[in-house]
Length: 265
Image (tube, rainbow, N blue to C red; front, top):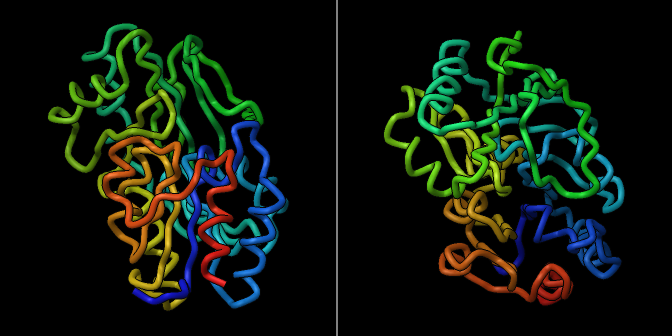
């Protein structure tokens, strides 16, 4: 593992962002200091790309966004470089299965064109700075009229991990269900995750995984931890994430990203 990374990737919520949704000046300065050494800078998040632009501008120098946990890779200029959608049959069959197996479930579709189609009773716990212009409909499955990147699942009173456990062995071929980083599990095309998204970025940039450092706190970060040469868990991270990490930083509210990056100077 190189002492200095050629690619840095950061989860946002619970990692790069403070609990109030802001980027600490110390964290921003530490990132920009390494950026001047020609390191590829990536934001790797479960957020849709429209919810990443403000943060990227605040940091400066961001090269790529890996969005929706790997379903979409976006360039710094806003160009959509890669996308992994489900087929129409996979989209419908997986959502119908979720409705069959999880009582009272509510669905929300993240469309490839950037739209969001939600069941009327879909309830979320998105970060406070989210400003999603979603269309609420009586039946999201029936309303879908194009390629879908992800289904978010509001499982109501059922624990999200228990819902994943119920759905996982029954998923249609070519699809999978996984933690999203929120309280809403998500259904995606098989093999779509932050690790696969970062692998696409690394290939475009000619960077080997062994030269990449990644920072995260949630279960949706585990795939990129397995991909990268060095993984850094935040002090506030899920226990399973800490167990898989190479390094553990202070929490997101203690400028943990900056503490690690400053040690690389």
